[in-house]
Length: 212
Image (cartoon, rainbow, N blue to C red; front, side, top):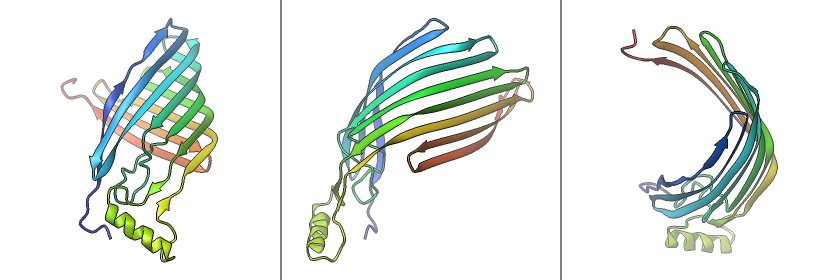
């Protein structure tokens, strides 16, 4: 019974450093990152990561661009906090995460219309450790362990989670300038990894005060 208990409210502090090169037709980037996570009745956590990639612009015109590249990413979290029982932060935090992808980005500008399309396909792999159901409450966890020992509950700990598979994404964004101050836009985003699929749509309006 979690009634009256509060946990979560996780905040992230940190940053990344990126070294990049771009001559207009070819580019490359690489850099490390570090973040510290802290929450209420949640164990603190930290993440180290590294991201690197290269790309080339197949089309590099003033109003039309097309780029193709390769992107690699690595993350390592000290603790797996991707649970929702008391004492967990509820955020993706694998102990090892690797990904490599081939992103393709296209943009086109017309007089009053801007189009952006991006897609990628790649491979992801991650491993996340299991743990106690109640990592920040010793009494609750010991009680649950005792109930498990006599067969009254099916589990008192979370199991390890390891997944690998093909990943992909697709995003399209369209902006229309009604006039100098008013813009209408829409966006569709789709992501997939193994059996996981997620998509979202957005319709938005932007108005710049004082322009007209």
